Length: 168
Image (cartoon, rainbow, N blue to C red):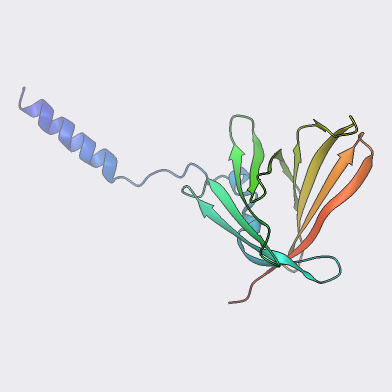
């Protein structure tokens, strides 16, 4: 019996490791931001180039990694976007080459992903927060619309970009 237990344990371990791993991030909710995956050319509302963005899936598809570079190459940033199953919402953590960071949280609503920051206090002592909305368009493009809302009513557009897929 003492000889059989190690053999059985080894056999069980080998079978366990040889099975296909389960997909931990395959639900529709966890794929809700997949419309943003790809290589993009981003333009401003006047049609001028804003920059280039590459969004890839990493960590077995559980994280979307964004890598942004502005049109002149001077501004870059990276974000990690993931569905937090503990809070049941999407989160983005953005960090740029200026040393700035932004943490956003939110949900998909129809053809839009809407994420917003916690509230901050500006230099004038007024509360404000950031809200970024990604909208999928019928032609496959994506609009990213970034607003800063002060005092709950005063809206300033920080960025308005149209993402078009790069052609191969």
